[in-house]
Image (tube, rainbow, N blue to C red; front, side):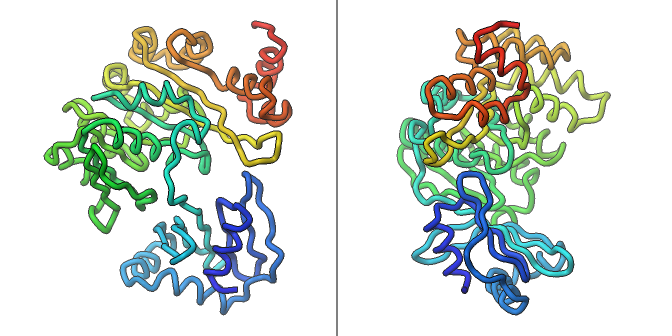
Length: 356
């Protein structure tokens, strides 16, 4: 099979990710689970041919030869867009390709809490974070936010991505999308000059280091609304991760800044639906209330979880309560929910209506 055939088969199966490796059977992730395709292993020559096709661009080929690892978007005509990572393993190339849906779904289609997401979209300054493991739907969630803002408000939105996944068409807003290496050299370099581009909203694809985080904080302090993602499991871990980007002697200053600029977080975990029709998100939402801002400022970050658990009046919800709700509405099997809980014991008690 050639690359187009593999992509077509992946899409036919409803797969989110395709896994290719030399002398191995191709595999595809469907509803979160990896399945082997019913085709023969890919021989070395064919794998090299697929790799060379993907790296036909001279810039890509040069970067891959320097780093042995590259991430980019590949467009397969009449099939779709795919975010591709090519890397080396045991001296041979391997490929993981994620299907990027061409249509941008709204909050209801994604089973996200629409009123809460719209509330965050209405922010005019500060920092908002979408958190979750790889493949949990962070990029899809942010795309739905940008599209909602685009259709609702007259804003200038600048995205800085590596690579660009979803493509937007201007509606009420104007959207400029910048891709790493094609349009800018680094996140921190893009953020250094972004305020001169008069943005209302900045979306940064991912924060990997202190300079990027520092630049985002500076941008928010200058009056923009920044959105970014973290590969973290919940709000508490995310705030700790941000603080730990910086050396210890700056932690007090950083916590003070976060307490002033952070608006909230949405953390996502995808669970298999009980009816077998795909996956559905469990959602943790946190708004930075005056109490949570004080806890951040005073370094009592782990205490925040208690206020998320009890913060329904502010629109907050813990994973525990979200998982229980999915079980009680019949959308998710109890064992599937239990497997995704931070604490299985706490989940069991919550499901039985027992307060600790």
